[in-house]
Length: 404
Ligand SMILES: Cc1cc2nc3c(=O)[nH]c(=O)nc-3n(C[C@H](O)[C@H](O)[C@H](O)COP(=O)(O)OP(=O)(O)OC[C@H]3O[C@@H](n4cnc5c(N)ncnc54)[C@H](O)[C@@H]3O)c2cc1C
Image (cartoon, rainbow, N blue to C red; front, side, top):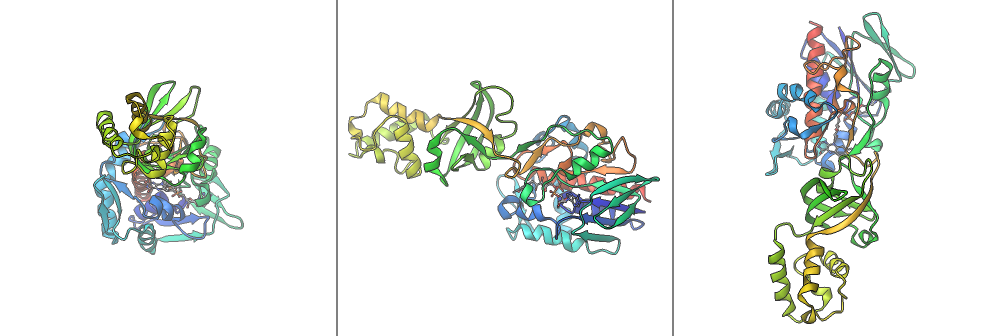
């Protein structure tokens, strides 16, 4: 029995390894790029945050997020880590729960999978773009530019549209649509946010710990604490990725309210400013030693205080204004960056047409899908790769079992 798998990314490679455990199967893995795991190599800033020990169903989204539960329980985080350990990958778990390869290089994850794929019953075609798939008897005909290959079962593991420069495309959605599967609206998620405040230009590159509240028409929409990075167009960094899902969609005024000193209370900051006032310093230095200098100066100016001001003359109301700028700085958001920059696609092939226990299509027997092409996306911090591993393993082993 031949199992064809379209896409040698995270979920496709995992599906191939799972299917190959059934010795009667012959697995054919099609990858249109020159090598496997191109996107995987770029994950986690080149470090690959391959899972998160806290990952469970609550960190996933989609029209029916509960769909992900079975796969995530069947091939859970512990099983995933054991699986990689058996392949030879050493990992390290950070206090936050994020898991990285011990080498700190995403290449280690790609290479350990690439080596594991070298099995008698797995054939890998790189540089093979699947252009068309047709039903052929009880199986499928897979068409490349100049080749046609027959498969008994087919797994679509083409990934999503996010990260277009790394291989994100519409391909998987198109293949599934041809078989009657519906695809939701696609949106970028885990993505930077653009803003209308010109002040960010001067802060480009500044990183700081921050609590971010996303307000929509003054109501709290999302909140997170972590590292913020200013860019010349807006806001980036893990804390922004975490709150970015669905921001700036639909009507309403979207505001990011930044607490740039989240580990200190307003009173503690005010007391600090009183102390600084006694030190005979200018406005420019009022927040020196408290925040990044550039950020401090920007906030002092935003509070209406001249950088040349004699701080000993500042009133309590003026100091409160500085506290407010530091603890509740408001920036108007305009739109998320596009799919090129997004780490994951929110939306995808509707999961109601797939069986959660096998990942098999309910519309076309023998057709399976896994990974980001489905309407499941996870939180920041290893959740999306865990979904790729779990759903890939389930799709591969279900298709393999069918072949026995
Ligand atoms: C910059 C960046 C950083 C990220 N960092 C993290 C992180 O640290 N942790 C985390 O959990 N998630 C991270 N993600 C998300 C994660 O990488 C994806 O969710 C995950 O790779 C999805 O796996 P997949 O197998 O569904 O798709 P992919 O890994 O994208 O693989 C799909 C493969 O299919 C191939 N393909 C597509 N169409 C065809 C076709 N027609 N014929 C042949 N081949 C085809 C593609 O070339 C690709 O290799 C990051 C994403 C990006 C873009």
